[in-house]
Image (tube, rainbow, N blue to C red; front, side, top):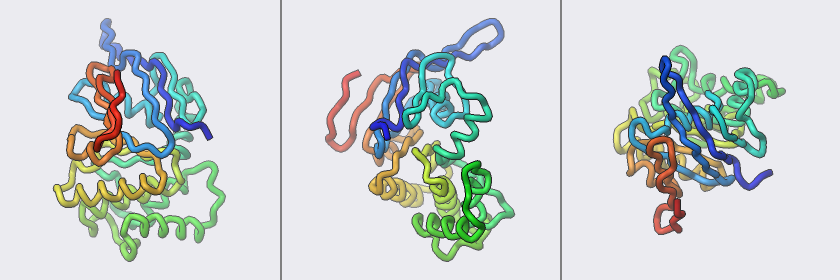
Length: 239
């Protein structure tokens, strides 16, 4: 396995607005090692959402390379990117994105059901989903629907769902945006525990107090990396 789970080389993304071209990323380069916990920050228009979409294989760059676990996925087709998303990336979103009429444990199972590489029986899928729910502190809540859960519990279900396929990275987009301060801290503690277990995490946030839970903070502005440093006294990287 390569030492970098993510390697981004001279990435550009240009959007066409009529006859005009609007650059969202301008030759951005970034590496994330296996087991790292990185927060990506930046003001509106900085390129962080565009970068998240490319890291999550939701979009392709205009030029440059995006290498995920040693494989250049920059030019993959839409269908192949969808497979990569399911197999390699665990998503956690601000709005949870749970199926309302489906139980918590069935929500957790969904990525397995849609996986092309899944050879598990229904019982094995249920056991794996149960383990993931226990991992985020939801033992005993398997049969509840999202409406029967608090916002924090719904986000824990989303985290368990993101873990189910044993992804290369967890990609969390403003995961505490709909949560109160106390619940946000509880969710961030789960991320810290998962990272301590060796899981690679990329966190997109605009809140510094949330970003400081990560071990490294990357700041974007105008489509470029302007600062990249380790928190809590870790070494600074010159940019």
